[in-house]
Structures are given as C-alpha cells and as structure tokens.
Length: 481
Image 1: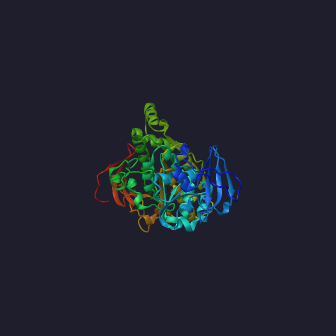
Image 2 (image 1 turned 120 degrees about the vertical axis):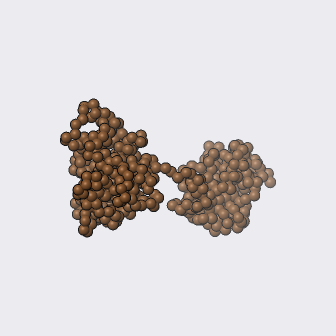
Image 3 (image 1 turned 90 degrees about the horizontal axis):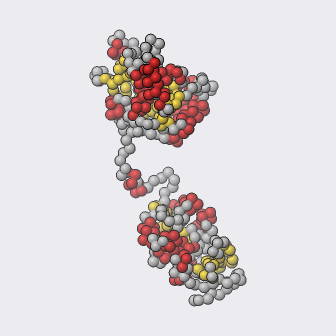
C-alpha cells in the first residue's frame, strides 16, 4: 500500500509508508505499526481492538505533536498488531522506541508504546490493564532518565512481579541503541531485565555482586586487642553504648578511643562531654599525647610539652568540641550531632552522657525522654553514617554496688529497654573502686554485653589505669574476669 486514505474522523493528509532513515526504522516495521511519513513529519496511526484506525498523532521535526480523531478509543500504539496472551510484551515510552525495540528483536516479540509520555504512563497502562496482564511477562523499557524511572516504577507497581524493568546504561532509549548499531547490547540488556520487586524488598537472585564483595573491615579498631577480637573494631553507621557505675572511668575509656582514632585515622572527631568544661575535655585529651595527666593540678609539664600536646590534639584541626553552656535539651543535642556530622564532616562523635540529657527534660518522664533521644540518635546514625559512641549510666543493683565491682548487664541499663534495643554494641566497664589492693582498685574489666555485628559477647580485656601517666593500658587477664 503506497497511499493511505484520509481518515474519516479528521481531514488531513497522513502520508505513506516508507522507511525513516534518520530514526533507523525500515519500511516493513513502519508499515506493520502504521507509521506514515509525509516530508519530515511522521504520523502514528492508533487503532481500536478490531484494527480500525480511530486516531492519529502527528510529530513534526521540532517535536511538536498534534492529535486528531477519536483519541478516547485509541489503545496503546501497536496494540492491535498483537493478540492477547503470550510470553512477553514490552512497553516503551514512545512510538519510535516501540518500533526500534520490535525491529532489533527481529520482529519476534510484541512491543507497544504508551500514548502520552512518562507522565501519563500509569493511566495508559491502567486503561489497558486486561490486555497487558494477559501476557506472562511485562517488560518495561522506558527512557533512562528521572521521569522514565519514576514512570517505570509506577507501572511495575500496577502489575507486580510479572514485570521486569530494563536498565539501559549506555543510551537513553531503545532508538538510540538502534541508531548506534548496538542491537546486540540492547537485546542482552533486555534479557537481563530485573524482576520488579516493591521498594524495600530485594530479590535474593539480585544480590550476587553485593554478596561477592569482601566483608567490610572496621574503619578503625579499638585501642585494645582483647576488645577488638570480640567486636572486630568500630564500623561506620554504628551506635556504641559504653556503660558502668558512677565514677568508674567511662569518660577516660572514651578519651583513650578518641586518641586512638586521632592517631590511626585522618577523620574528624566530634566531642560532646556534657559533665565537664571544654577546657577539662581538651586538657584530658592532651594528657594522652604526652602520657601526663594534665587535668590534675599537681602535674608538672613544660611549655614545650604543653605546646606539643596541643598540636597533636586540639591543634590538629580535626577535633571539634561542643560547649553546651548548660543547654542539654534533646533538640539542641540532636542538632549539634547533625552539625558535627554534616557541617564539620566528623566521622566519629562521642557523647558523654545521655543520662544527663534525659534528666534535663522538663517533662520529668525519664523513660519517655530516653526512648526519644535514643530513637533520634539511632536515626541520625543511619542518616549520616557516623560512628556514635555514647555513655549511659546503670541502675543501682541490689546488694553490692557497681563501685565494688558488680558485673554489668543489659538489664541494668538505666531507663527503658531502648538503649539495649537500638545500640549496635554495648560495652560494660567493671571495677572495684573500693578495693584495698591498688592494682585491683585501678583495673577495669571490659565486658561486651551486646554485639550486633558478630554476636560474640562476654569478657574482653583488663585495663590498668596508671595514675602517673593517666593512661588505660591493656594487661594480661588475671583470671578473675
């Protein structure tokens, strides 16, 4: 057929069937789909279920479209060419792409196009739901751009797991593959289309590349070998809680980790020590650099030693401290942690301690306040990817107190169960601060109470505090842990 009659429902010439060289479409494909050429204009014929032409869309070289005929009776472009049922049907975002896909497949499999672009894809497919769902597999091959991706997900939601979504990587659409002679690559990509699963659900068959990656090692280890053997170090996006009785060295334990991170990484560190001034915090961290307890009034240090300690720590331009001025409400703390993470690029943030935040709330409901701060901290860790190490107090046990060396447990965490539930790691510190023996009195036993990463819990190591150097150093297990 060379000349095509004027459609009865509108009065305009519609051209004739011919190849479209600038789009790579051969005459046979154009004729099969009802694609007419008239100079530089292209007209796509739309038909009803009986194959009768009911409408047409005219495309000019500058991509302007005009529609004529009974558009409400028009199905998908190409729909009348393929009867219901079959193994595969492909849906594209445009008429040219439909013909391109069909042609590259050697005219083997049904291909149709939505009528009005990505924004109307869901509506077009919903209107033709019965026809499309009659096929075993629905292959969505929309443009490789934001609008196409969004529309593909919407259509896939409509049909569920019988949908497969083509992920085009090197070209925007099917026609670009055809024009660039990448027919084989397109066919391979088409066959590799992934089965659609709703957001948040991942098909196990799609996980090989992820599973085949080596298990990620810790971003930084702890300063002590015994603790590293159980925890495998500190990882990004991890919430770590350190807990112990009052006055048993939690803050010093954190400072040792701060100094270790400072020495072993190039990352920025945020410090929020809420029970002490920034001066006290700074001098305590500086103490670790020169092995002298600078925070004590009787410690002697030369100006040169002080300068050296400062340059290694506070002067490194990697440590940022929060001067809270007594303001410890939950919103303020959360905003400061977020700023440390996002504004100052801190990969490690130390918060000592959540109990003081909870006690400062006006509501007086400690359990509710603790649930809120822990939930928001947990979400912030996931949002920013930081390693957040916090301190929490313990409830006083019955009988012998923690200051006399009572073992720690998750059940003793102060407040509700949110600390235990939301923390990735919980580390308990135990020390008999009232022992007559000096070594016993200054030895802290480190116990892992929760370990989401490896599941290993229990005794980790012993740390002996030296009053001369102000350091907590790992010592050989004395058999009493």
